[in-house]
Length: 105
Image 1 (cartoon, rainbow, N blue to C red):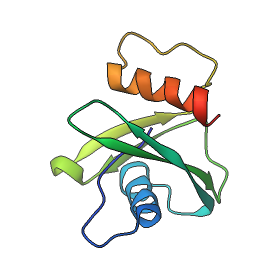
Image 2: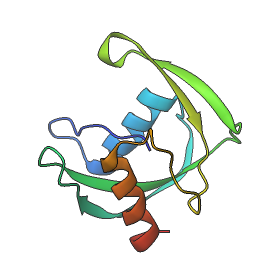
Image 3: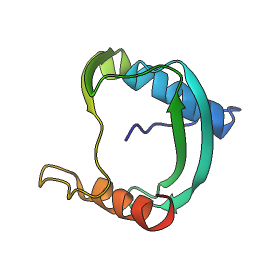
C-alpha cells in the first residue's frame, strides 16, 4: 500500500497518482479508480483508496529509492489479498487490508 498526503489545491486522484510515482516509481497508469474512503482511527486520518492499473508489466518484486524524508529505500511486492499479513505489519495496515477485503476486493 502506498499512501501519502494531498497537497493544497490538488485533486485526490492526482494526489494518488503522484504519491504512487514518488514512492514506488510507477509513473505509467492505464487507469486509476476511486474505491472509497475509510476512517482509519489513526492520527485522525481518513484514507482514500484508489485502484491503480499500471500501464507497464511490473516485476513480482522491485526496490525504489525515493527522495521523501531525505531519501528512503522502499521494497515492493505483490500481496495476495487472501494471505494473512505477518506480525511486522502495523495494526493500521492490517485494518486497512480488512477494509479492502470487505468493501473493495
